[in-house]
Length: 196
View 1 (cartoon, rainbow, N blue to C red):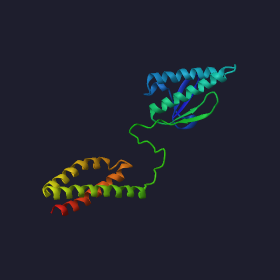
View 2: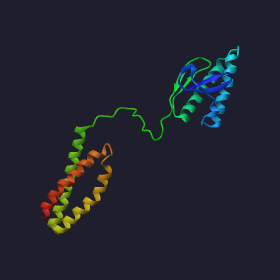
View 3: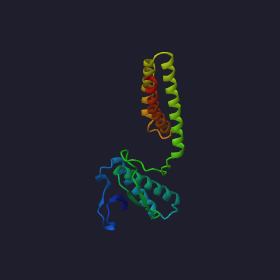
View 4: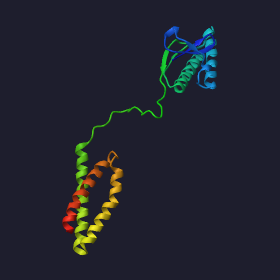
């Protein structure tokens, strides 16, 4: 779509260059305020271009206002708008802003996965969980009863499991979560060997 001035009126043209069909903005569903603003801008731009006096400041204001209106038009119509500055003749293509349902483009490339560091953190977390679970189960099995050791291990596992589930997709924390989860599984082998 192209924003043009014909006479003292703003018109919108589709593809096709100079022979494209031109439409009055008031006929489109862009809102009465925007259509009115486009026509006011066209009248002022026509007056500035006809003026023989020094129109540097006025021309800059007309150019700025035209770019602003082209951006509003692109946002309302959801399509790019080609805008030819009536004062300088410079052509600008204004892209519409991204829609909320459209995923945003990644500004930076994704970082590589830190396998060595992540696996080191996972191994450390697994070791801590295994030692803690086996110490708890072994102490309770020797000091009190094997059933109490089994129940305490179930309570610890049930208490930690929701946190591990929620942390599984957090970028940095997931390495510790993977290690703790693997440590729980391995610790249960030791707990069952200790209890039975």
